[in-house]
Length: 306
Image 1 (cartoon, helix red, strand yellow):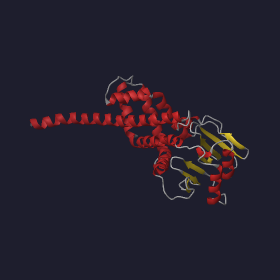
Image 2 (tube, one colour):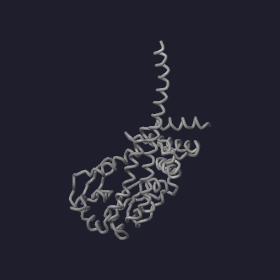
Image 3 (cartoon, one colour):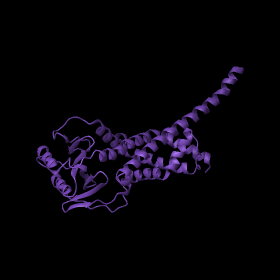
Image 4 (cartoon, helix red, strand yellow):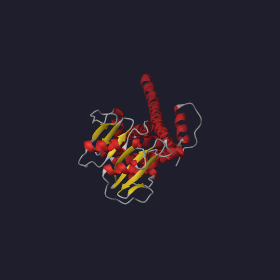
């Protein structure tokens, strides 16, 4: 396949999938901020077992809630929620229920929904857009090495080639997540532990100030806790906490490895994707405009001659 044909396919696939790719990239950029915000706002000993049990007793005396989450950067603790439900949001400073919607938390939650489900729960759009992104990256590889140039095209090519392996792995891991590929044996499903008991298990091993969530995922009760440098994910079982099987695609795609450095890498990759899509569309637009202008000139000249 000639370089010219590869270049044409590279451009047109990007243009055809421009809107879904833009949504996926922008929401991915916003989501890449969450681990950094979460880790950077943890204050040791600020969230204790006694506080959480007190809130559970006050706001869920019948023990019906099966999930909780903490947004340390927003200073909120949520009982319940998920699947379109808001849950009971508690201010971690006052311990009182709050109706205030933290703007940043709302943006990140909405971004996650769009990033994973697109509009109207069209997951297949996300899957095929990710496949298109992989084809775009692969075709770029076969178009030759870039030349150093302080131009939009030069920056586009140098960004792509400098971060090529990481960009490809980011897109590939996203596709694996969409297809449910984990590269690990699935953990056995089990009866969920009451939230209060799950909190006690976690408190016995960790400072709860870094708690991110306890919830069911794929029929398994899971918990994630962050000590400011490392995120640990557990299966919560009646027998106690067990390290969750490593989900390599999710770990890489969400940047939850090597502490804060994984999050920094994820943010850089998100910015790179945004730069590549923006510069690529501008380059395409300029070329298209020039081509149309050239075809109009002979027509104008012919009309003037008549």
